[in-house]
Every structure is written in structure tokens, then in C-alpha cells.
Image (cartoon, rainbow, N blue to C red; front, side):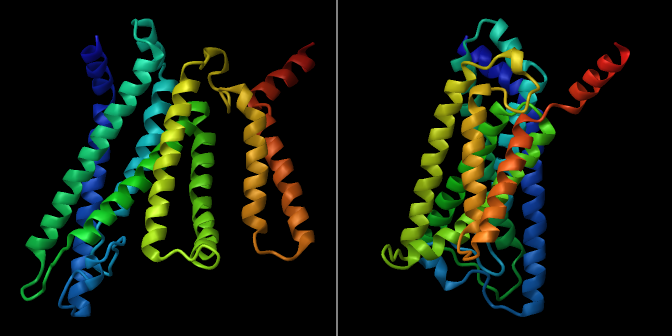
Length: 312
């Protein structure tokens, strides 16, 4: 029974996995070619800097130990996998075939993470091989385990965290356009959170070093991913077809999401701002926009109501 479920899910998603793998490989091959071309114009004698020997995430001018394209592939996979299955009623097909919701959820998640890990390994192997084979004569390509391991762990943690965010959002948001806008906006906002958090954590009273900050961020990503995966399993158990196609398919989350949205967005835009008038305006705009976004009637619904009133 378990193997049958694995085969069904694989046949459902194999084209998407192949497309994601092809995207990761193609993007990284192009980036290697661009990096080596820029190296030739700059006249550098080594592709990897000395900081590769440190226990810190490595990103140099010509070589990145863990490609940002792999993180994007994880982000895109989390967005598409759950959303497509909800839109095409593949989940309902599995449920009616006798599989429990919990088994479907965890099998799908396990298979997705294993395949994405495989894509990462193959892409990194191809990327590093191309650097070694294509490097010009007389140019060194020296790697070291401290920088590589830290970069791989950090990259995988960030990729898994972003996958979890998109996976969870696609589970509870029933409108594809709104899902893309929501996830993209939240992902971009995380850059602001990082910019705000870094000076706080590296100065007193915390005074974290660069290495300590890296491992703290890794831990935060992994803990957040575990929480979202487990929470998603709980919500997946109670998804109802009655709310399919609505912005939030779990109506009980509407008020908590609204509250978190108002606090989160107001905090980001007001941080470090001493102008209280601007802060109040930001708060009011956030309150109004959040309410309109979460409780707005759909355009089709409003048009139907308008026609019903006029026909009556």
C-alpha cells in the first residue's frame, strides 16, 4: 500500500521534478560560464578565496559554494507541489483511493525533500566539476571542508525553510494569484528582517560573531521548517472542500493571520523610525489593507450579487 502511494505521487510530480532539476542545472551552468568569463577579464589567479578555510558561509567573486538558484528551486517547489494537487483535486483522488490524509501528507513531503536533495547534490557536483574542467591554465581551484560544509548546511537550511514557508502557504491559500503575491511579499520581507536583526545580534548585549550568527540562522531556519511541516500536517487533516478556492481554506486562521500581518508589517516599516505620525499612518494603512485583503468578497461574487439585484 505504501509503495503504491509512492508510485502514484511520483508519477504525478515527476515532470515537475525533472523541470526543477533542469532549471537548477541550466542556471548553474550559465552562472559558471559567466563567472569564468568575468575572471578572465579581471585577471585573477585563483577562483576561491582564503575564507573557504573558515567555518563560515562562503561566497566569493567567482565561486559560490551553495548556489542561490538551488534555494530558488526549493522555493518554487514548495509553491507548486501542494498548490497543483489542491487545484487538480489530486488529494481528493488519493483520499478516495483509501489512503489516509496523514500518510499522503508525509509521503508527499518525504518524497519532495529527498528528490530536492538529490537535485542539490547533482547540481553541486556538476557545478564544481565545470569549475575544475573549465578553469584556465595557471588558475587554482582550491576547496576546503570548513567553508564547504558550512555553506552546504547553511544553504540547505535556508532552502528547506523557504520550501516549508511556500509549502505551508500553498496548503492554506486556495487562490493561485493571491498565493504568489503573498509568498513573494513575505519572502522579500525576510530580507528586511535580516537587515534589522543582524546589527541587534552582532552588537551588545548579544555580540555574536559572524560564525555564531551563521549557526543561529541555520537553527532558526530548521526549527521554523519543522514547526511549519508539523502544523501543516495538522491542518491537512482538516481541510474541507467547502472552502476550496477561497483565499484562506482554513477560516479559523483568518483572525490570527490578520493580527500577525498587522504587527509584522507595521513593525518592519516602523523599525528605527522616530516619526510617530508616520508610524500611525503605517499602522492604519496596514489595518485597512489587511482587512480588505482577507475579508474581501471575490469579484465574481459581487458581480453575481449585482446581477441578482438588478434582475429582481
